[in-house]
Length: 257
Image: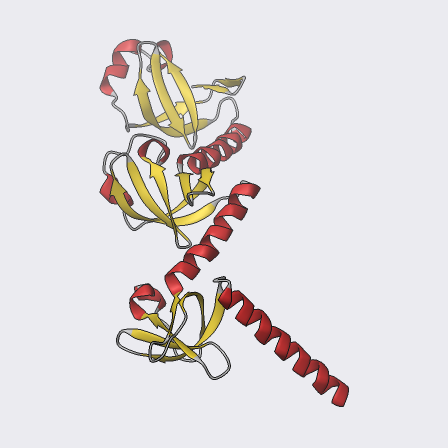
């Protein structure tokens, strides 16, 4: 029993020392919320000491609650009557940045939320870190109504990361292209000559109609647009129109309809 108590005490002392070291080095520490005021949050930093975090630094949907632990970083040590000041905002950024660096190294997707539209693109929050998503990398096609993306969740790849400046460039388009490619492969694998497919017109060209059939594009030559009218019949169709078409075959990944 004495041995167990000794080991337990030693572990607690080490934990306390590690906490104080991290706090002094301005690394992220987890602190227990003691009280939530109208403007400040009182937290426990050990040895019967308390510190404050501005309540404004917590997102509206993540308000602190007494008894819970929150991440924080030391901003200013207390002197005299002035309490020790911590920042939850800086802690979230640091934790988010560590996650961003890891995702970039592993070429993994990240989840973000579109915070605003600016000239040339969008500002996206990824775990507390704000990145820039150029308009050209926001969608598969040009974004006509930027306001529709505001406050929406997006999945992206990090295409550029400047560790020195803490900046990143995001691409949602890369994710959409990857998913479209998977759908296309699945659809092509299910294609059978003679089968009937329903698709939407992507583009009407001089040679015929380009049709999207569930993620894969197929081509209807002028002579196959209709039984009698042929090339004249295609004039009736506009982009987005729904058509039924028969699969003639798939040659080198190209669907003939």
